[in-house]
Length: 307
Image (cartoon, rainbow, N blue to C red; front, top):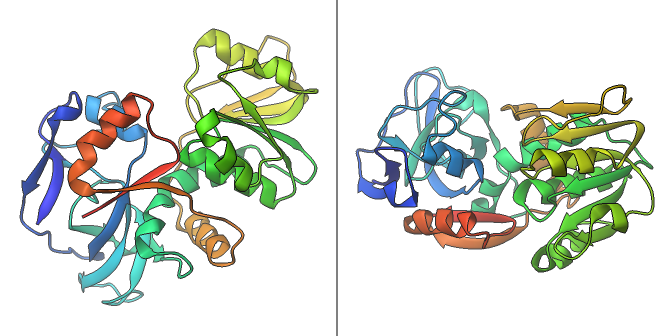
């Protein structure tokens, strides 16, 4: 089968398309024929070797942490899934940037039926990150003013929708190329961060900030100052600074794999309460080019890759 692999850490040029043996499912695993995987910004850090301490991998390594596809074989002791089932999941061991991948049966859920199976590959990593930011860490509730910083990205699109779903007033930062989509996803207000300072654009402090953008210390401090006393900043990109004596809470987190959360997201998608916004669909062989586009700031939203 074809697979997109790295043999060493480095620039996007280290990504190679190779012919490798098709894997066989072990005990508790299934073999999935991949309909699509998706690109996540963290893939760049993994490829460069910046995540070695938190996400060690054995080289050569097949990329791809999101998968959507069809089960074509079962390992021993798999009873809840069947050949022919369409599934979606987060594959923490990678391998989904290929024509086939094995995955633990317990980490998969039924794919949504309301969207093309390939589109479901955009959900797991981005959707789980947004879900846990909005509900677990921020505890967003009806009527709160929620600022989503970085709403034009894959996580941001889900965060806007989830916060709006529970009745929050959502303010979203986005570049001009993402503004229309972010509004369509439910943002009540948008701020073009390329043209105006957030502090000047807001008409008052917010209850919650969901930060999805890597920020320098100065920018992060300015962001935190926009939260009301007793509010909270939740960041998926590192710990936000809070002034000594402040009553603002600050949380930094790394999303975990959780099939309960993923199944709930799928349910929202099938009910039409959440939309999976696919910015582009690319052939899997273009994965290195996708990395280059991301590093150059040319991507928005979610890009899926199809074998």
